[in-house]
Image (cartoon, rainbow, N blue to C red):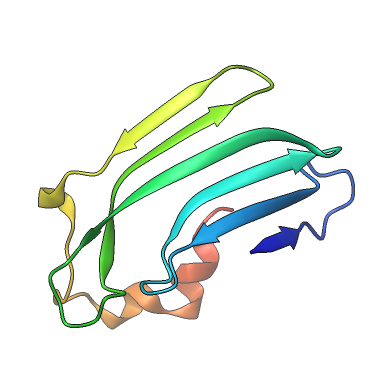
Length: 102
């Protein structure tokens, strides 16, 4: 799936997301500036073992910036993933979601 930014002079012109057609998980994103690939992020997804194939959690993220050579790898241990838990409804309020920095 190709998408473009709505901001003028943004750090990328467009990105391409590779999405699994069964789970809808985005497993790779490539960023382009002036027709040249400048960065990518790969994502590993783990099933939560539920009936819905879309019930996934990140296993890790790996990315590389071709402009700087910087590489990052973030691992999300299965022990820290919580789902179907008893969270306060206020966690998902519009007010709370607006607090999340972009």
